[in-house]
Image 1: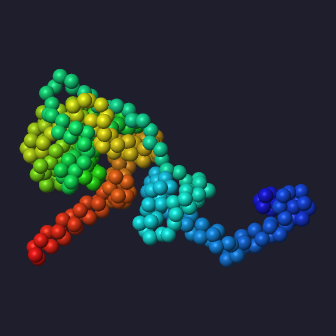
Image 2: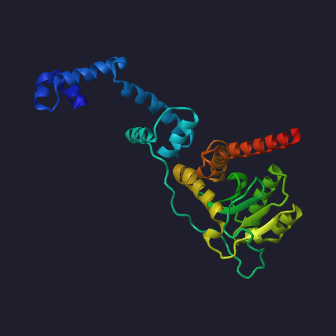
Length: 302
């Protein structure tokens, strides 16, 4: 109503318009006075304005994928005194929303007759330290030049992505290249299990030989559905929701590769993950190693 009065006040005057509308002239003038002098705004309005800036910053800094719960979690981490319901209210007013995950298409090429390793995981995706259990999977991205395929290897303990690769071809080298990156980044392979689905890329001779050379125990889902590799499927789903569906259409592999690089860096170092206490994966691992070091130092002093 205030904007309507602004548009017509020169022709009809404020008071005549207010007589036809359910608004008192004093209310209109008070609103205009606050617009001219923000110091006259109510305390809650001033506070909301400050919080809107913080909320928008967190939302933009995190690829625009966070909903109210994650935005609230991040603000709390920054020692901002704010209630979750306030974040929800202000995000609604600002038109900000988190992304919503969709369904994932199946890309695994299964080899039913091929000999494969045992299922050492049995759908129990837990680990008591880094480099105890890795999960691997592939997904795809449609571009103007055809499909692009992406391979991820994730450490189950922290959900940190330790290896990834992008390729124009769904071949064994794609998965193997991601594995090589993970092996280089994480040289501690003692008692490490590598779990995957029944895809040909992970059952290839070159891939299984590389796992054996590194002293890693291979594990492959026994039933053959998405639950056999649920954590890896979750990472793929987040990637498709937070990067691919949000920012497409994609023109070529170079665009996908650069966007994936940015997302993996954000995911590992800044994204809050609820299963690990609403911490980023890298911070969660750092906390683990600091605890281990303090315990070792404490034992040495006794």
